[in-house]
Image (cartoon, rainbow, N blue to C red):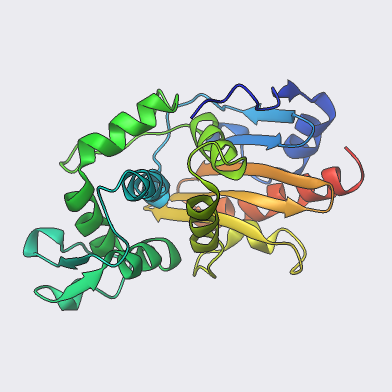
Length: 262
């Protein structure tokens, strides 16, 4: 799958000004990447700075799972037995179901929809963490790594914007698999900061994440002038709620800018 048909991003100074003006936290506490997929208009704030992805790593897991599904290495109706090694604290409902079985379909739905950590661990055990990382590298996400040990996961706003741009434009999978991934990302999520920044009639396919003071959201917005990608990664210590508000405000300003023809 090549990226030769992608519209090349072009730096948009007015878009950058709109983003920076709306940012309610110190710019050093945020990493932002925005790109309009129809026009190429783009802007970044600390776009290549290494950041903690929190649950955004699950987008890469989703993409690799569907790559294997298309390759015949994995089936959506396949069942996974949840093992003690899969157990994870935090978000999810599968922590209490160790020893039972779950389909790949349901595990993916829970991993994205409610950010179920146990579901994510089970899927990664099945598809292989090395394959997740290898696929990220193949797609050009040079600063994105996911580990199953105690090493910190890494990503950048630019990497996440690239991944979502490839997904939105059908460069990661066929039509059916692309549609299935977008449907999963359009589930109503508990932490929906990007959707809060756009009108309720606007569809957003996104994944949020939080860990300690980290608040992240990355998504594809189906706006009135076409699709665009917004990634906002924040680490606003000690007030994480200001990071959440920053995501909402950036989403709002970007939507207003593009809706006005920017």
